[in-house]
Length: 106
Image (cartoon, rainbow, N blue to C red; front, side, top):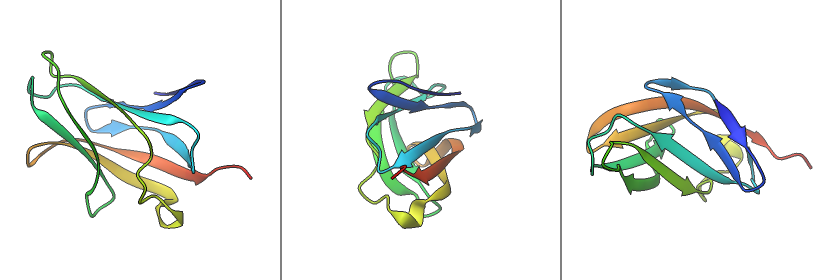
């Protein structure tokens, strides 16, 4: 499911799949949501095959998290198109999903 509004653009999925898209550069904040993690565990979000760091937060007492962030400064023309986003708990891959990055209208 993909949602956006006046202040947030959100993408999230179930387990190992999801759909989403975002423009770059973006005027929106990005909210990354997930569940099924160990309560209190640090969740690390990476992107691309090189697992470039994007964001990090701790799962709540229910094992869920929401990270309000912006697109990484490393995003540029080379990240246009479909990229892989991953959620990690320590060294364990917990979720992965595609994100479509497309140029903002000019």
